[in-house]
Every structure is written in structure tokens, then in C-alpha cells.
Amino acid sequence: MKKIYLTLLSGLFISQVANAQTLTKAFNEPVVGDTESKKGYDSVGVIPKNTGAGQTWNFQAFTANTNTSSSTFTTPASVPASAAFTGVTLVEDQGGGNYNFWKATATNYELLGSASSTLTFNYNGSSAIAAIWPINMGYTNTDTYSGTVSGIASGNLTGTINTVGAGTGTLVIPGGTNFTNILQVKTTNTVIVTITLPPTTLTVYGIDYTYYHGSQKFPLMTISYSDQGTGYTGATWLNQALITGLNDKNFDATFQVFPNPAKDAFNVSLSNSNNDNGTIVIYNAVGQVVKTIELGNASLLEKNINISDLSSGIYIVKTTLGNKVSSRRLLVD
Image (tube, rainbow, N blue to C red):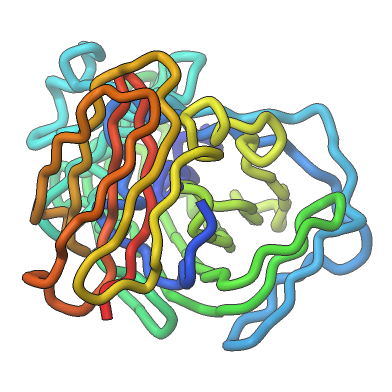
């Protein structure tokens, strides 16, 4: 039950960039085909979760344990239980028959409910808004949600979720690698579940601290606390992509966007040893397509792209090469 109650932002929240302190729909919202994998770590001393600007969060001495967690994002049509969740656009498959059901709008990322083999939580009274894009330092949003419980028990639930852009600074991951321009997001979630028979009320609390960087779509590190009435327990997770080198798989190592920041134009350069067809799509901060450019299929793809018609702001340069995809943030002055 813990996994169902407390994963409101497990999927929420790609390439070094000038500044990663703004989360956008185009860059950070999960889409079909995404996978978030995490490796568990044990704490050494006090867990760093201080908030505010100019912080340093040092996890260097933390040690790996045997815990892992993985979520794959798929289509509603592939999960029969989706039919019960009105408006669902994306399903987060956590494995073991556990699912979260999401709705993405032009500006919002909302949780419609969760299901396991024994219990279903359907926020059919009001969805839980996990994000209103963009998210940066000082962002805050509080949302209430409600719905029903069904399965081996039945009843109702109400909840409150508060999301805050709580800190900026430098993150030191286990092993000692430093990442600057980090955005810390703090999420506090309270769920009150009222079961009809036998009459039971259960209050569940959860607090997540997530640390985002421009090199990854999902958080580099996550600290999760939960309390189901017996006191808080905690877990620390490291993004598995930092261990396995997923970026190289998606040709990030050869994909360059320069200059960055840019004003009137920028250059793209990437190796294409398989001579796949390449395409670039540029998105604005709310996920709208503002430019599409065909790159061809040469073994070295280089192109100068005019952006003099774009307003100042943060954009996502998404490049597709055959069946591989990689992205870069672009700051337009």
C-alpha cells in the first residue's frame, strides 16, 4: 500500500547546459517510452536537505544498498485499468501490478489515481495537480484532491499536495561527482483514507526532496520520507542513468548545441555513423513546437539554425536520429 499512497511525484518530475534551474513541460514531463530507474543508497550522518538559494547538498559518503526502483511510462490503451480514470493520457507502470494514472494538459501534470492488484485509489472527485509548468526557485502550488477507494476495502479519500521550488545550489552525488545549477523541489503530501467496513481512518504523510539538473529528465537524487502512523521512515535514491551511462546510449556524448546561450542562431553537430535520418524539433517552455528542421542522413550532421524570430527564454532542442532521441536546453537571449 505504501507504494500506491506515496508515489504522487515519482515520475515527475537530458547534456550539460548553462542553467538547469527551471523545469518545463517540454523537457521534464514524462512521455510514453520514458523509464525512470533508481538505485537505493544508505545515509552516512545527517541527510542533506537544507532549503534556500546557494546551498550545497553533499551525498558523497553515502553507500549503495540492494534496493532498486523502476517506472516505465506507457499508453492508457496498454493498461486495461485505465478505463476507470477519466481523462488519463499517460500510465506509469511501477512493476508488480502497480500503476499511477496521469493526465497531461497544456500547462498541468495531474495524478488521477493509482491501482494495485488489491486496491484502487481513484481521484474522481478532483485530481491531484503535481505540477503547473514551469517550476523554478520560489514556485509554490498547493492542491486538494478527493476520490474513492475500492478493491479489498472500500471508502473515500481526501488529500493535499504542496509543491515548492525550495532551493538552488550544488549537489555532490555518492562517489564525489559535483553538479552545479541544481534545483531542489520539495513536495509534501497528506492523504486521509476512510474505509467503510470495518470503520477505519488512515492518515498517510509523505515528503520528497528531489534534485534536478539539466543532464537528466528525472531527478538526480530523491529523498523520500513516509509516515503511516508509526513514525517517519526514509529512503535515498540515485538516478540509475548516472551509473549506467544511459546518455551515451542516446548519443548525448556526440550531440552539441552551441553557442548556448544564443541570440540569433545556434549550431548543431552530431555524429551519425549509421546514416540515420535526423530531425530537430524546438519546443518552448510550455511544450509548443516552434520550429522543425530536417537534418538529412550524412555521417556528420552539422547545421546552423536561425532563431532570430524566437523570443528570449528557455527552449528545448530535441533531436531524433533514427529511433534514438536526445535533448538539450537552449537559452535564447
